[in-house]
Amino acid sequence: MTRESMEYDVVIVGAGPAGLSAACRLKQLNPEYSVCVVEKGSEVGAHILSGAVFEPTALNELIPDWRSKSAPVTTEVTDDHIMLLTNSNKQIKVPAIFAPKTMKNHGNYIISLGKFCRWLATQAENLGVDIFPGFSAAEILYNQENQVYGIATGDMGLSRSGDKKDTYMQGMELHAKYTLFAEGCRGHLGKQLIAKYNLDKGKDPQHYGIGIKELWKIPAEQHQSGLVVHTAGWPLNESHTLGGGFLYHLEDNQVAVGLITNLSYSNPHLSPYDEFQRYKHHPTIKKHLAGGERVTYGARAITKGGLQSQPKMSFPGGLLIGDDAGTLNFAKIKGSHTAMKSGMVAAESVAKALANKQSLTEIAEFSENYEKSWAYKELHQQRNFGPAQHKFGYLLGSAYAFVDINIFNGLLPWTLSDTVADHETMQTADECNTIIYPKYDGILSFDKPSSVFLSNTNHEEDQPCHLQLKDPDLPINNNLPVYNEAAQRYCPAGVYEVVADPDSGSKFQINAQNCVHCKTCDIKEPSQNINWVSPEGAGGPNYPNM
Image 1 (cartoon, one colour):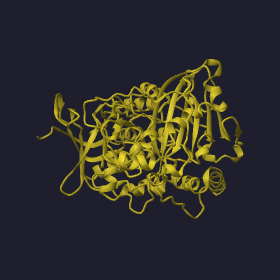
Image 2 (cartoon, rainbow, N blue to C red):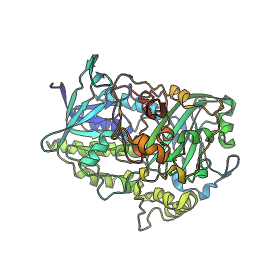
Image 3 (spheres, rainbow, N blue to C red):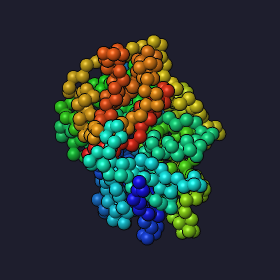
Image 4 (cartoon, rainbow, N blue to C red):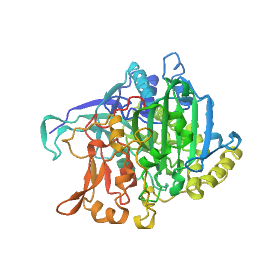
């Protein structure tokens, strides 16, 4: 059956900072361009999750009068602490003079990135951009010359077996002269493009962390608007795992608290979710949350490989931008500003091609334009931070970063590599210490079902499972005896379970309706057996202010 189609100059996949910045910049350059953005969340911001301390560099360039336009960028950082948690009760405050300058946040803002993206979407719509939330980009469209000429949205109203239900609605094709992919970390279409065009040739494998975050409402007398706290060490140091925590005081007596666990960890018994629940009990964190109420919960993978892992971003007919290409600056633990800049550079490169009457070509000039930008220069300056942590551990890695960044300004004449992919680092269960996690107290720590409930996650249950197993037998036949099926623990939403089966003894159960779209399973599964594809549009979490 022929699908209905719509024609645009530019189609953008993903209404995050990169995609929306690209859309705004295109319309600023030429209001006559037809531009649309498709977003799989039920609304813009529904799937957006970040810390977030926001650096306004790109925003100042894109919308210089953002303050007069009521941008939700209001809580300026007033105090900035880095704490080394040495064990479950003790901590050391790192003197500012010894902190990498990338961790200094003077002039930055604590924001809800979801709120910010909703505001940015309004700016794009005011410029004439069409934004279609609730429609997942399920398929890349290629012509006979292997050029990308748009995307197709997913069919809706299919049953679990793939049959058409009474509510069936066929997906639509969106054709474009150029298509920009801004899906965020581990975009499922971006992953296909990287493989098809061999965009990661000569690059290190991408590296990731899983960020788990909660938003709390705390008593007014405890609130310190603008306070930023970053931590390293406990609890992850007990399992020799890298990562770190954060706690930010936003407006309205709200506190954002979270833990990033590097997905290069080796112990299959480790649960990033439970490490985060432990983290909140440390006195450094607990004192900020005591007497408060948890408002919402979420999780999302982040890209942290840096330039060494960044694929080529151009291909015939389009570009990868933002964290679809891995533009996050892990040394700063910030990516919104660099994602926005990559989108703006993409828009300028596409606009030049359109002005020259080009379409579906590879915009080779983009790479040169991107490398001239401050975003690329920033990532190049701080390129060795992540590999140094992986090679030398937190303390020595941080000491290296201090010398490299603070003293030599990133100009040391070498580039470190980390060539072991995160899914290759898992040791067998019998090689590692079993981790027994404490019971949840219902005050600071909570179980997964109650957390998923607070994420407002919902999927139509009778639809094809969007978590696809290449080998359905592998979880029980291999992963259970070898890794004690680590998917039960690395998923922060209770999607994967090993349950008793009267016939076989054990069965691998996928609770796809719980999925918060973090992509951890797609990244960490040791055999790369799980493939995350887009579910029916509007499914997934519905974060209010994350």
